[in-house]
Structure formats: C-alpha cells, structure tokens
Length: 339
Image 1 (cartoon, rainbow, N blue to C red):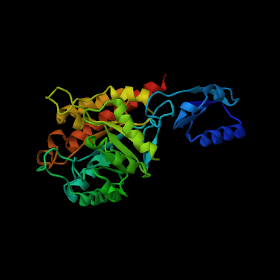
Image 2 (cartoon, helix red, strand yellow):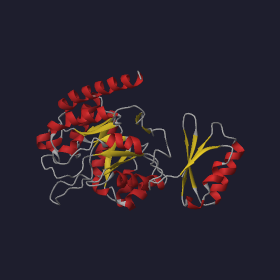
Image 3 (cartoon, rainbow, N blue to C red):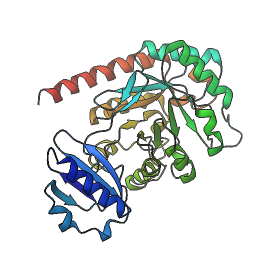
Image 4 (tube, rainbow, N blue to C red):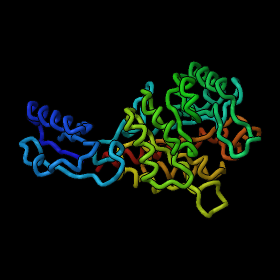
C-alpha cells in the first residue's frame, strides 16, 4: 500500500499517522518526490482501512500495490534511485561504464587493463576473482588473491572495483570491494541476498538465465527488505532456443524496468552474445534504450584469456567503442533536455 501525502503535510499529523501505522506492525518507507511525500507501507496491510486513511487532512490518495515486490516498486519510490560509488555514481543521467577482464589473471594484466580502460573513459573496473564455471575443469579464478590484485589496480587508477561473490562464506573478503556483483546463477541464492542486505554497499544483481522480470525484482527485494537499498539490476541475456549466440540479450528490459522500478539498469552485452563482434552494436542499442550503464569485458590479450576470451574486446577496440557510446549518450541527453 502507498499513501500519497499532500504538499507540506502538518508535522504533528504526519507523526501521528506514522505512529499509528507502526503500532499496527507496518514498516514505513518514506520517499520524497519533487512535490509530494510518499509513504510505502510494507506488512499485512489487509487490515488497514483505506477510507479511514484517505479521510485524513494530510492525505491526498491511498493505493494498494498488487505486485509482490514493494521496496523495488516505482509506485513506492517514483524518483529514480541514484547510487554513489566513490567519486562517481550509477543512475541520475550518468552513463556508467564498468570495464575490465572476465577474470583477474595477474598483477601485470589487471593493472594494464585498468589503466587502459580508465584512459578510454571507463568509470569502474570490473574483474572476476571467483568464477562460477559450467565445467569443473575450467579456470575458477584466483580467489582472494584476485581481489587483492583488483584493489591494487584501484590504487593505481582510482577506479572503483566491481567483482562477483559466489557464496555467503566469502562475505568478509568483499569488505573493501566497491560494488558486489551477484551472478546469474546466484540470483535466487536467497541466503546470500539476505546477507548482502545487511551490507552498506551497492549490490548489482544479474538476471537469472531463465528468470522473469518479477523473479528478478523479487531478488532485489530480498536485498532491500533486509536494509540495503543500494541495488542495481544487470541484464546479461537470457536462455532461449537460439544457439548462435551464447544468450539472447533482452533490450526490452530497459523500458520495462523503467516502468516497474526505480532501480538503475545496467546492460552486459559481453555475456549476452559471447562474441566480441556483437558487443559494440548491442552496447550502442543499450544506450539508445536508456540504460544507466554497461558492463563490458576488456582483456589486453583476448586470444590467451583464461576465461571468456571470445567475448572480450582488446583495449583499442574498447577505446573506439567507448568514444561512440559517450557521444551517443551525450546526443540523447541533449535531446531529452530540449523536450
């Protein structure tokens, strides 16, 4: 249920309403818009009398929310969420470019890639330390050592780091990681999501291989319901009958999620196709749909990468692409400003 208050509500009446709702065992999430305050009510609202609340002087409207996700629902939070990460942000009209190798392989590799992507305009460094692989014989990542090298690359470049967590037992290792990524296979690892809800740092949740929008948003809800509202959604392609590409990138996710949620939306064109030649056109398409950022794999020697080399761009290709992405985003932003 959401309660939309009239502009400049009487403070005493507002406090009285909140105390009454808290007494009913209802959690209250307050959202301040440009002209209105909205109270998002979470809990058993079936016993609340809508007519009684609507009759209050400070209340403009009351609506029941049918969707099972409450905190992630745009109805609860009409304004887009903007998440600060170091000296940059995700959302709020910024095009966030997270770039780096699928896996951290050595100090020389990750520092070289970090310097290259920063010079090309990337705002965050992504790199895998723990790698969930389909085959148990594939490279599984460097683990804690990989995280140490990512932090070293951050010291060298100043870029915030993004890396994937695989298990609740690893949480202490991610204390100094700027954005924790939850991979597609862990999107419904609810114990992990609850634990990340207790953290005070951004969490980026990748869409599961065959997950619906509602299932995806419910995963975000797990994190937010446990206290952490710094959630980012990442579309990385879903499983369909098509076998030419690794996955099928669902670009409709951007406008759909814009309607359903206030959370930032990132697109991963690298995992979506598994082919480096398709990364650029899909990245451009993602920016055209209005995404908040991109997650792009960049390796200084893709042919010899220990994981996902075929979908990785080399630094020169990334530099060319990022110039086009930033130019397109600037053009579209100017068009929005002229409306």
